[in-house]
Amino acid sequence: MYKRQAECDRLAAGGHPVALGARRVDRCEQIAAAIRDGGGEAVALPLDVSDSDSVKSFVAAATDAHGDPEIVVSGAGDLAATRIHELDSESFAAQLQVHLVGAHRLVSQVVPGMVARARGDIVFVSSDVVPSPRPRMGAYVAAKNGIEGMTRAMRMELEGTGVRASVVRPGPTMTGMGMTWDAETTATVLEEWVAWGLARHPHFLRPEHVAEVIVTVATAPRGVHLTLVEVQPERAVES
Image 1: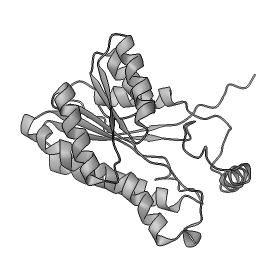
Image 2: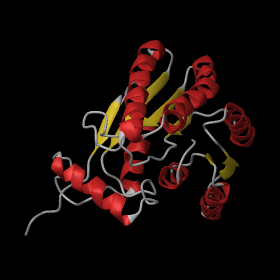
Image 3: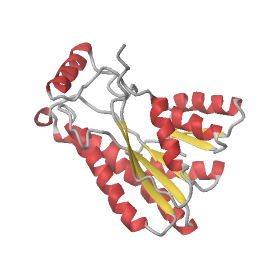
């Protein structure tokens, strides 16, 4: 399984060995060490999904550490709060490289082996910007639409192979994405969300909420395919 802390913690708790991949290997190693201290199996490896050689090296190292991958979670990325017409094409393409092309790099390295073994799960983390686009996130919106389109095509191509391609589509989630924005940018983005009716209440999902759903999708019993699960933050009960 390849991805972030919450998913890794939950899969490790279920007995799955995990390989964490990211550019911030030091952060991944902290997570891996905590898993090992708890009795699980985990390694932290460098991974830059915008670089094909990095993806190949990561998959090879993860396979050497834990054997052939059975569960892959793809969700690398960040976003810039810029209007589409104010974003230069190189920056637009860079976001597509991480969110969409990076996901395909993982697919090309792990899915052929899954098909040969007639077993595997690949879970793509999308976003509710697909059905409800948000302003100042044009490249991110385009990339996530691409992820879901790619996954739908994969499901048709993989039907009957024993390999499941699924999408988990979170709503607003409190993660590191957007945390580098300054206060003015954050305020502007939120104001525009409100203006377009995209902020019904102030509550956000936590990473562990999304992780629970990802694990549920990836560990569903054989014969069951959870193809698309959207997760939204629940509004607080009014007293």
